Length: 290
Length: 318
Picture (tube, chains in turn orange, yellow):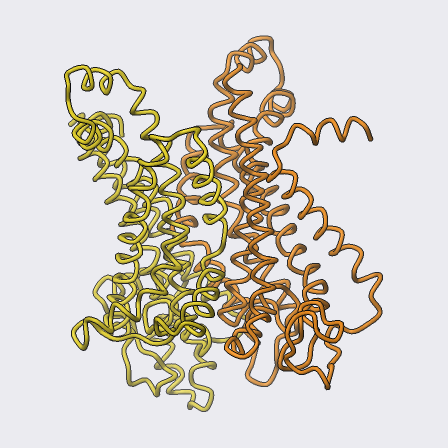
């Protein structure tokens, strides 16, 4: 425990605040669904659209009578789940492709590079929109798409968006690390490709991917919010973006319904960017030492 | 020949990227869990359906239908919007909405540069001092705030509470220039703040590096004035970074414009995309997204070429 404190003391105050905020929402995402027995959609009929700090509603209620604080805590889980799964799975697939193609080089690498460029040539929100539009279409006019399928489609679309972003970073890092002396030395000593990849390339490439992965979490959260605002995101106020999208119609009468989801989204994105930046800086410093 | 080869290779890659990304969209259309023709003509007779299938090239295999589609697409024949009874062509919607979005992006870039250039130079000259630290940290935070968040805050504070600017709809420049700018202030500012923040950061780093360079010391010892040094020796290399940054941020700007247009109800390209999405106009959607990808690629290439013009050192190596 003491060593953890020592490590934390090295960071600046904004970084510590970022870590704290991410820890808090992470905890909310895991613990809140277990603790709360009340429905986030409980309607307070006597408190329609009241402001913050009235009648025990910390963040007020919206015009439907939903408690905003409770909705936000409830929405934390899906918001973070979407971001973590999309970046985790997309990052893993992207890194795998990127590292292998950067290590093998030659024609395969050229093809992978063109494919990455092609996918990246579609702005990421537009790509996500296209994927969601196609995949969340009901098979015929008489059936509807279930909410779980909508969530799955959003996650899938954002995962596909993330693959080339992190894949390209992994590829670039692999290209530069595999030219280093210690890799040549290992090769000349007759080390197997798998050994070189696992012992020399991956440990050096992953930190670079990690730094961008934090930024990617921010990108995904913003994209998820944007999808909700465009009406194709996670349904029924189950994520921060969805709460924001539902609240924007009554923005003139109950502005707090818009403020609080915005604050949650903005703080999370700022924290992710701050941590990503710190990782990148420490990598640069390490690089400068070598 | 030696000079032409890298350019040819780049053009080849470019073409491959465009073809692949549009082909990818074509395949996506085939992934629809439902039959596109049945969706458009729910009540049509088998003959009508067969005819539509032929016009959409859905009776061929993926590759042939893609190349037929691409040939039409290049010629501006992008099919119809079927929800409106088949009366309106996709191309007419493109020509109506695309200029609005391009204008918004242009204004946004101007706003971002107007904020970023003075701030970047100011913070670079005061690097490490308190004013630099405050501005730099604020900007880092601002660059992380999603643009829809800024848009909502501006709408509530400046639009609804203070009533300084309208928060909805669009007025053409020809109809009323004053109203035109007044309507676009809030959307462009909400898009420009984040962009300005990232430009300032890059400009600051660049100016600091340039000020330490030998040729600046040389220019100063020659007795050139500060403003002259800034313009000719510091700003020229820094503008390369700005162009690169503009190219890198273009994707985010396109996505941002899409959301912002929908928030402010501006009938631009992003609005069309969202509308096509909501009304399931997949034929139109395919062309819209292909145009977005095309525009993005073209912008990046132009930026690359401009960098070559500004910075002669990169001409050979790129």
